[in-house]
Image (cartoon, rainbow, N blue to C red; front, side):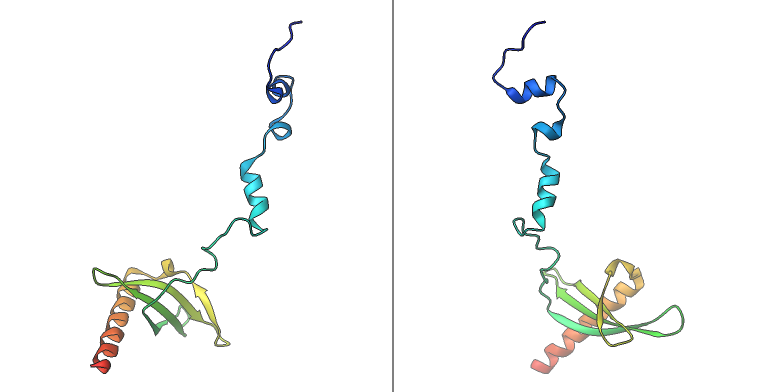
Length: 127
């Protein structure tokens, strides 16, 4: 039997049948373990994006009820609007985060028009 001549003892362990877990750190597992300790800053979950205007918008629900939304919009440089956040108001009057992708194309257009109308109304009051 020939001997392996190397200074990389981790490689010797691998050749002799050691598993990856016994030799190398699993970076994905290590990152997940340290994420909850505050060592990795995760801004996406708690950072609130800036908005220029907030409006209340309503639509008819599936069962004939009226759904009320708080819409937060940011004005784009090239004109138009970006919906930063949408909250649906529940039965208790509390805002609950709403997925903007659930709006149809017609609803998105109606929201953008409502944002523009409110923006123009606010600017008319200032002048």
